[in-house]
Image 1: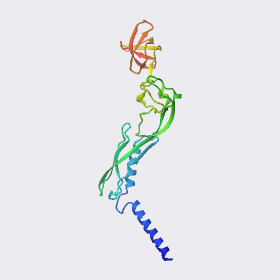
Image 2: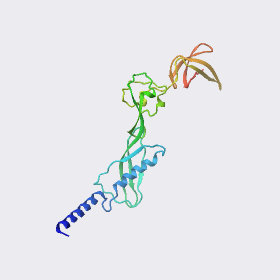
Image 3: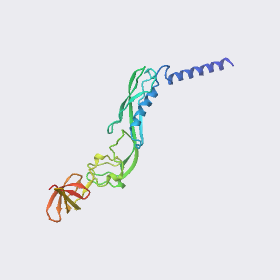
Image 4: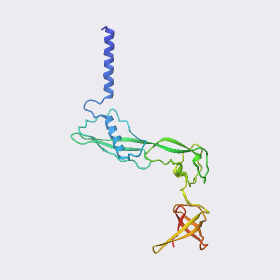
Length: 237
């Protein structure tokens, strides 16, 4: 082997040794990727297996961190976030002859369906299925404030203008109407364990538990009740 060839081989061996020392955990040090994986796995075990599209990603840990190798399985304490919270701290610890504790930040995202407006709408308008485009997006958190099904648009009006190209959120829509103005409804009243029913005509729109005036078609009197279910108004005697 020539001097130049020997020099090249030694240089390659030196580079490989340096690379391995940068990627592998030092002797006697706990693997930081294993700590991150333990935090992610603990959160995943807590969610319903039927919930799909969820991604847990633990933050990168400082490579200068030196933890003693844990001789026992890592103890992990994790709590799922509330609402749209997208980051939680997971406590990973070694409990035994070696003791240490580390709080690992974990980001949470979920792939979900959203409805995007094909056209701009104003306040007090109904949105039809043809007015929206169904898209898939990756959003922070386990839950979403966006409307994901066209069926959820039925009977609901916009609370404010929604521009074209905007994803529809639940708070942009009023509650679904159970009673519609001019609709034939059933009036119900309970007294002494008995239920009395009468036909009526709704004088206004109403969502669940909203008060609404109804014309009693038997007595021809106007009474006030509460929207109970679709087409049913509950009257307190």
